[in-house]
Length: 253
Image 1 (cartoon, rainbow, N blue to C red):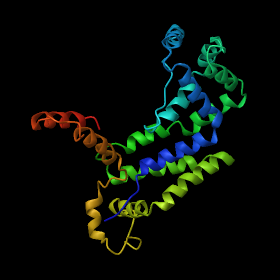
Image 2 (image 1 turned 30 degrees about the horizontal axis):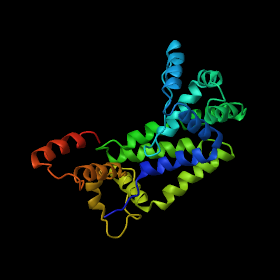
Image 3 (image 1 turned 135 degrees about the horizontal axis):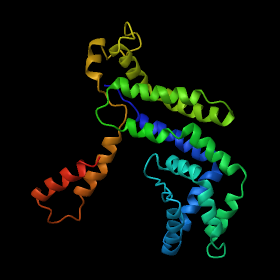
């Protein structure tokens, strides 16, 4: 048996590293979300303004969902001037979040940081989504990760190097992924011999790894589904309804 740490989570760790390196961008996203949180008047105001120019509403990141922070950064990069104009039209005395957001927008490095993240790391959400796909061949999954490594290592600059080192460190700790890389090379005909395979894994057993997953996303999501179905407060949940509910929920992950 080969134990592999979820590689999709490893890519998400890169996004977390980016978030930690650009505090002003993170503050912008958080504060804008606070401005329109539980305030229908401001939400309506922003919708009217955005609809005038046929722009989509602001993307709101959700901490428990991967990819959403980078998606939000890409949105603010593309519609920075429009969002800035809307925020500046709001009264700073109306809420502390408005005042703080307007101060953040005065930061000259904010827009350049947004452009940097979107241009160099805007592909990460799609990468995570691809890795979450069920039934991917092992060779395809490995190739997706290799493309991420190539893109990260091709960037220059101190910050880019630190982010690249983060991903390298994550992969270096994932010994099971190294084994699957060797197996993938054998299956694709790029490897002769099995010198780097563990002793308990024969070269003949590589056949069964053609569709080996390198993520545990499906398993983790199934936990919440089972928790909802098997909740202790379900006193009269019949088997027939349980079966129907189970089918509906499992079709969504």
